[in-house]
Length: 192
Image (cartoon, rainbow, N blue to C red; front, side, top):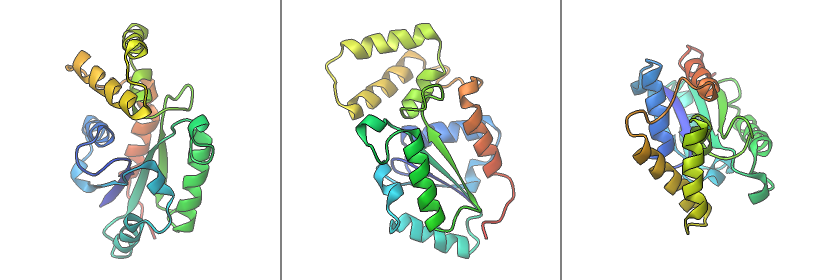
């Protein structure tokens, strides 16, 4: 069994849905993956998180052989310790080392690959045409929703409504790193 730790819960979230669709697109078996929703991003950085304790037990039982951490970069100006690509990577690598999981895990930081900031929705926006992006951004600029969480939720809904036939352009090069990380996750490597 493989494990993917992501933000949100293990049920239907935008992160979870995109990952599952991409796994299917790569013709990989999503039934081999245990999806673990970590809730808020901050939970990834809590060494005593119950999910980590359960993963270590699963590894010792040989129920989990590989782990992929998928976490948003967010913005450094919003969180000087955990925000931004570099901070997120550095702090998550510390946790992985402290848990002694570095031999069997990898990290994918969700963001706009060009700016190295943002979240899942930033990755999605980076993969659409300039015209589509301008249309969505124009709507977001003139709405009354100011909080980050509302912005993410609205962006996700606009995208799903506007482009229901082709929800994600997995052929876009901005998805290449995530695709590669998923392919490598499915390669046979023992965690211990």
